[in-house]
Length: 169
Image 1 (cartoon, rainbow, N blue to C red):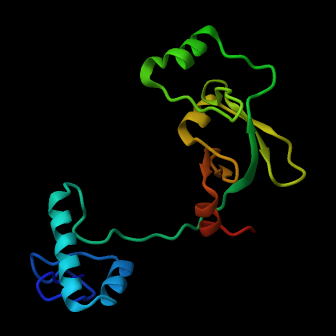
Image 2 (spheres, helix red, strand yellow):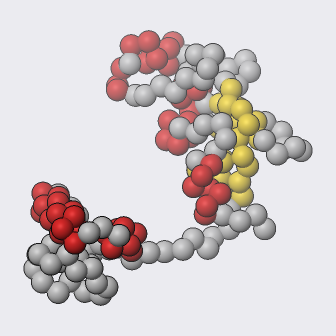
Image 3 (cartoon, rainbow, N blue to C red):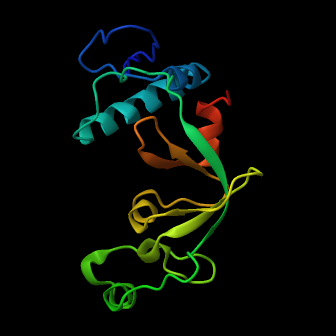
């Protein structure tokens, strides 16, 4: 927490009405500043909090992920062979009806309409099809990870987030 009047950085509950909730990282950064600069920055943060409508008054609880998932790193994403969009799907692609976004691969294939074939980076795994809904919802990219949870739900994670959050069993 921080006091925008004195520049004091402290842990625990807010002490005064004008105090600013800070993450550990923010507090560590602010401690490196001179007192005058720290007060100025705390006042800027305080003003930003007042202007925001849904900012929590303190840091949200933190959680550590402990679930097991099945995942494959994505080496390639291509349209499925022999699958052609319907006339309605082509109209949606060309006319942008309904405001739906269209995901295109480098060759210009509309993967959010036809779905896609994902080729895993790991050897020994065959390419597999994902639905158009999966492509629209998750917008996967090469280098990220296709994920399947215990309950069968399929998702996507960018490489950095996945590597930071999961360890191979």
